[in-house]
Image (cartoon, rainbow, N blue to C red; front, side, top):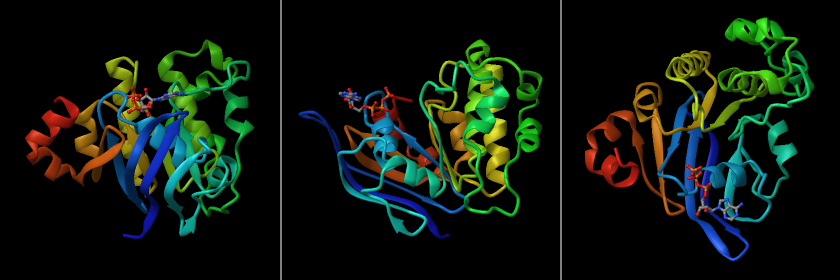
Length: 236
Ligand code: ATP
């Protein structure tokens, strides 16, 4: 499989405090990958640095065959990364419809681009709520909207930071089903989440961060077999 995203030797500081000491993650075309680790180990920082949101970083980030290590976030996004950030960050004063069309584009000239109709088919709830303000949605609806908004940019890679955090079990199930169906379309996905069960079922491979370093990577089958790794690094 061709590599789509390749993060290597990533180092990031918040002021004097170093948060990443050599994070490494790779995602191939069409692959479903997770970034795992306990709280504060550097998962969000890795995603923010790789997508250019955190300006000051060391190391190398390649996306779609280009070295984007020094690129600003808007340029990296245009190259085809759709980010569903922590806390969703939907536009509270825009309607669902407006949120979806606000950032929509098909710069990569996809043959089968994401449209409103396609997003509404994936999440019928969003169509029912089309005229509602972002602020008035439930947590699950906001997450669906954040995913839909990212898809409307026609990404080659969808990144979700805390895919199901704070959602009711039933809604979590809907999000996992959606991610499975996106994987089935061939979209590459990188997910941060604490629910290891569904991730082991859906994901192809996993990267585990500990204190800002990637300490383990491998397939779902090898992670399932590595009970000691799961206990030591994830506490499960
Ligand atoms: P969580 O699962 O809790 O979201 P995480 O694995 O995503 O954790 P990060 O949020 O990336 O971890 O945090 C990595 C380290 O960087 C932690 O020690 C954290 O305290 C620190 N950190 C994160 N954001 C900031 C910030 N804005 N300023 C200073 N330190 C920060």
